[in-house]
Amino acid sequence: MKVKEADKIISSELRKGLILNHLNTYGRVSTREIAKKANVSEITIRRDLAKLEEKGLLTRDNGGAIKNGSTGDLFAFYDKINRNNEEKNYISRIASSFIKAGDIIFIDCGSTVSLLIDYIKKIDPLTVITNSLPITSELINFSNIKLILIGGEVDSSRRAIYGYSSISSISQYHANKAFIGADGISLLRGITSYNEKAASVTLKMAENSDEVFVLCDSTKIEKDSFVRFAPLSAINYIITDNKIDRTLVPKYDELGIKLLCE
Image (tube, rainbow, N blue to C red; front, side, top):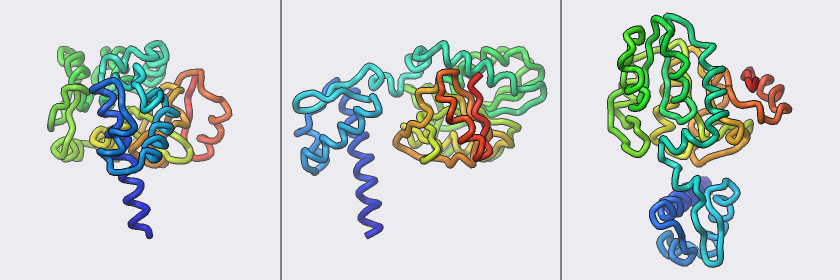
C-alpha cells in the first residue's frame, strides 16, 4: 500500500510539471490532451488544474487552462526580480545588516537573494560563495570581495549553475552564514521549491553553514511549492516584508526561528 501511495504522489507532481511546461511553451493546455499524455482520466487532470490555479500558476477555462503571466516567468531570472521589487529590496537591505567584515557567506541564485549584493559591496573583507552568474558578474571587480563561483552545469534560463559537480563543490566549503531563497515556506511542510535541482544546491548551502537566512517576500509565507527540500529546523531566520500576517511571528518563534518583518 505504501508503494502505491508513493507512486500516486510522484505521478501527480509529474503531471503538474507536464502541465506547466506545456503552458510555458504554448500558452494554453487542453484537459483532454494532457489526460492522454499522462494516461489518466480527464477528471484527474481537472483536479490538477484546480490545484495549480489555487497557487496562481494558471487560469482554468472551458476545456483546459491558460497561463498566467507569472507562469511564463517561472524560470526567467530578471522577470522574477522585477516582481515585488520594492519588497525584495527591503528584505535584502535588512538581511545585509547581518553580514560583517570577515564573514564567509553562501548566496544562492534566488531573485530576492540576488538583490543582497547591492548592500554588501563595500564590506571589507568578505568572501562570497555562489552559483549565480549575475551575482558573479556584479561582484567580480570588487577587490575587497573574495569571490568563489561554484562549478557545474549552467542553466541559461536561471542564470545559475547546478548539478552533481555543484553539490560536490559546495561540500568543500563551510560558511558563517547562508542566504537562500524559497518558493514556499510553511509551518506544515517546511521549505519548498519549484525546481528540484535548484533545491538540492540550496539545501547543501544550508547544511554547510553556521546560520541560515531565508529571504522571501510575504506572498510565499505559508505557501507550498512542489519540492519539499528542507525542514524548518534547517534555518535560523526568515526575513520578509511588512505585509506578513503578524500572528505567524510567535508561531515561528516557538520553533526557534526568528521571523523578521520590520
